[in-house]
Image (cartoon, rainbow, N blue to C red; front, side, top):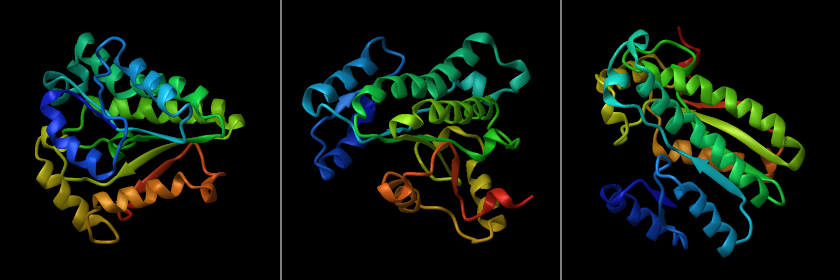
Length: 218
């Protein structure tokens, strides 16, 4: 398990302890070499990897809160670097460790396919991320490595707090979803865990929506 920085460490450490994670390291994908050091540690300690969860996204405030039309180059590149390229880089580093096949996951959102108010340039990045999932699934499939994008409905997370009017977004999701309920962390975890099992070995390259059916409603 990894954490962004010392400020984030205190929020992640209790989970790492509960899971008895033998590897617990800092990982800021914008710091040169940190990503590689994590995978070097995995190779040294375990020698192989069964699954990888990429759950990282970031956009500078000015880029995220402004119109897509107005995003400057630096804001766009940082958004894409952290939210999409880091996934591609991790897939590259995970490939040689998945000697018996494996599963690679990343987190996306409905705003990749539809215009969601206030999601802005992150929707552009998530669309690129989902395209990367398809291409990497095709490239790694012959090695038994499956690649998935997980698309939950709105979740009240620390990351979501950066999206303006997020409470209204959650209310809309609950009222419109066929299930009339919001997704929970456990819902997302259970569905993702299934895709890592051998019973899902022929599922790859797609987006799994865990949103109570919200994505099918106009």
